[in-house]
Amino acid sequence: QVQLVESGGGLVQAGGSLRLSCAASGLPFGRYAMGWFRQAPGKEREFVAAVSWGGSRTNYADSVKDRFTISRDNAKNTLYLQMNSLKPEDTAVYYCAAKFNYDSRWYEGGMDYWGKGTLVTVSS
Image 1: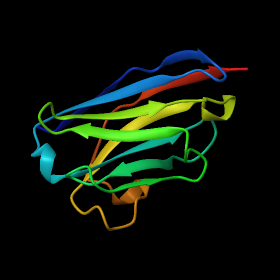
Image 2: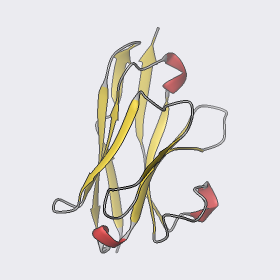
Image 3: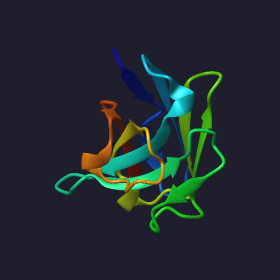
Image 4: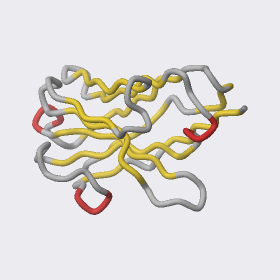
Protein backbone atom coordinates (compact mmCIF):
# COMPACT_ATOMS: atom_id res chain seq x y z
CA GLN A 1 0.00 0.00 0.00
CA VAL A 2 0.99 3.63 -0.30
CA GLN A 3 3.16 4.98 2.49
CA LEU A 4 4.42 8.51 2.99
CA VAL A 5 6.75 8.80 5.96
CA GLU A 6 7.93 12.19 7.16
CA SER A 7 11.08 12.82 9.18
CA GLY A 8 13.32 15.69 10.23
CA GLY A 9 11.06 17.54 12.61
CA GLY A 10 12.21 18.75 15.99
CA LEU A 11 12.81 21.73 18.23
CA VAL A 12 14.67 24.73 16.83
CA GLN A 13 15.18 28.33 17.91
CA ALA A 14 13.67 31.19 15.98
CA GLY A 15 15.89 32.09 13.04
CA GLY A 16 17.13 28.54 12.70
CA SER A 17 16.70 25.96 9.96
CA LEU A 18 15.35 22.44 9.52
CA ARG A 19 15.03 20.10 6.58
CA LEU A 20 12.06 17.78 6.41
CA SER A 21 12.04 14.63 4.33
CA CYS A 22 9.19 12.45 3.10
CA ALA A 23 9.99 8.92 1.93
CA ALA A 24 7.38 7.51 -0.43
CA SER A 25 6.61 3.91 -1.30
CA GLY A 26 3.82 1.99 -2.99
CA LEU A 27 3.09 4.61 -5.65
CA PRO A 28 4.76 5.75 -8.89
CA PHE A 29 6.41 8.68 -7.12
CA GLY A 30 7.66 10.37 -10.27
CA ARG A 31 4.11 10.61 -11.61
CA TYR A 32 2.64 12.39 -8.61
CA ALA A 33 2.72 16.01 -7.64
CA MET A 34 3.83 16.35 -4.03
CA GLY A 35 3.15 18.89 -1.35
CA TRP A 36 3.58 19.89 2.25
CA PHE A 37 0.79 21.00 4.55
CA ARG A 38 0.90 21.96 8.21
CA GLN A 39 -1.49 22.09 11.12
CA ALA A 40 -0.88 24.23 14.17
CA PRO A 41 -2.65 23.51 17.48
CA GLY A 42 -6.26 24.61 17.31
CA LYS A 43 -6.06 25.55 13.63
CA GLU A 44 -7.05 23.98 10.35
CA ARG A 45 -4.56 22.20 8.14
CA GLU A 46 -3.08 24.62 5.63
CA PHE A 47 -1.13 24.39 2.41
CA VAL A 48 2.59 25.15 2.62
CA ALA A 49 4.28 24.23 -0.67
CA ALA A 50 3.93 22.04 -3.75
CA VAL A 51 6.14 20.67 -6.49
CA SER A 52 5.21 19.16 -9.84
CA TRP A 53 6.05 15.56 -10.71
CA GLY A 54 9.24 16.54 -12.53
CA GLY A 55 10.25 19.25 -10.06
CA SER A 56 10.14 22.11 -12.54
CA ARG A 57 7.16 23.90 -11.04
CA THR A 58 6.70 24.97 -7.44
CA ASN A 59 4.13 26.90 -5.48
CA TYR A 60 4.28 28.36 -1.97
CA ALA A 61 1.98 29.85 0.60
CA ASP A 62 2.68 33.55 1.04
CA SER A 63 3.60 32.96 4.68
CA VAL A 64 6.61 30.80 3.75
CA LYS A 65 7.67 32.28 0.42
CA ASP A 66 11.39 33.18 0.32
CA ARG A 67 12.03 31.15 3.50
CA PHE A 68 11.05 27.59 2.56
CA THR A 69 12.16 25.55 -0.46
CA ILE A 70 10.44 22.41 -1.68
CA SER A 71 12.33 19.87 -3.77
CA ARG A 72 12.22 16.21 -4.73
CA ASP A 73 14.55 13.41 -5.75
CA ASN A 74 12.60 11.00 -7.93
CA ALA A 75 15.48 8.53 -7.98
CA LYS A 76 15.17 8.24 -4.19
CA ASN A 77 11.36 8.56 -4.01
CA THR A 78 11.86 11.39 -1.54
CA LEU A 79 10.36 14.83 -1.05
CA TYR A 80 12.09 17.59 0.90
CA LEU A 81 11.24 20.87 2.57
CA GLN A 82 14.12 23.15 3.50
CA MET A 83 12.93 25.61 6.11
CA ASN A 84 15.06 28.66 6.89
CA SER A 85 14.53 31.73 9.07
CA LEU A 86 11.99 29.82 11.13
CA LYS A 87 9.50 31.73 13.24
CA PRO A 88 7.45 30.65 16.26
CA GLU A 89 4.33 30.82 14.07
CA ASP A 90 5.81 28.03 11.92
CA THR A 91 5.25 25.64 14.83
CA ALA A 92 2.98 22.86 13.58
CA VAL A 93 2.74 19.25 12.54
CA TYR A 94 3.99 19.08 8.96
CA TYR A 95 2.39 16.60 6.57
CA CYS A 96 3.55 15.25 3.26
CA ALA A 97 0.83 14.65 0.67
CA ALA A 98 0.49 13.42 -2.90
CA LYS A 99 -1.93 13.97 -5.74
CA PHE A 100 -1.91 13.20 -9.43
CA ASN A 101 -2.79 16.59 -10.87
CA TYR A 102 -0.45 19.44 -9.94
CA ASP A 103 -2.72 22.06 -11.50
CA SER A 104 -5.83 21.30 -9.44
CA ARG A 105 -6.34 23.20 -6.21
CA TRP A 106 -4.08 22.36 -3.29
CA TYR A 107 -6.33 21.85 -0.29
CA GLU A 108 -6.81 19.19 2.39
CA GLY A 109 -9.72 17.48 0.66
CA GLY A 110 -8.01 17.36 -2.70
CA MET A 111 -5.10 15.09 -1.88
CA ASP A 112 -4.89 11.41 -2.75
CA TYR A 113 -2.45 10.29 -0.04
CA TRP A 114 -1.17 11.61 3.28
CA GLY A 115 1.67 10.93 5.64
CA LYS A 116 1.22 10.89 9.41
CA GLY A 117 3.19 14.06 10.03
CA THR A 118 6.27 15.29 11.85
CA LEU A 119 6.25 17.94 14.57
CA VAL A 120 8.20 21.15 14.16
CA THR A 121 8.49 23.40 17.20
CA VAL A 122 10.10 26.83 16.92
CA SER A 123 10.98 28.52 20.19
CA SER A 124 11.21 32.28 20.57
